[in-house]
Image 1 (cartoon, rainbow, N blue to C red):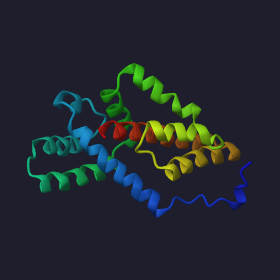
Image 2 (image 1 turned 180 degrees about the vertical axis):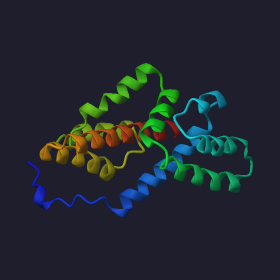
Image 3 (image 1 turned 90 degrees about the horizontal axis):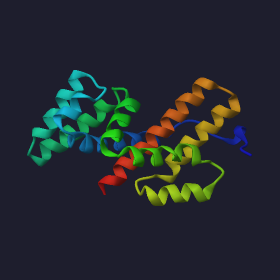
Length: 169
């Protein structure tokens, strides 16, 4: 049983930095989509223009700068919808169902399942995953449906993000 009075539920600066870095790294698979797939992304025209500009760059330093910019812009878009769209472009429906299943299997109290997940998806950070699961448990404890929905959406996006990033390695 979790003793909530002992838990610090603030998101650390390190966790925020890791999240920003994950989004930056997602700019690479986004830039690898075809122009047709890019146009179907749930994103603003400005974002799509920046993303398409990334595909045309050949200079490594300019490309790295634009990757950072696109990563920053992802956070200004609907991150969950964008990650979901990219996820469904990169994985078959069968793979997607298996990966989505982790959202119900992962449990803060089941270290074995957490280890299995981390072995399958090498880009997983134990502390990041633990924090997301802690927020889900906290929302259940508080019986806050809005917080629970938000926490579960964050967890699902994280699962998809690490699946996408693990696929790149």
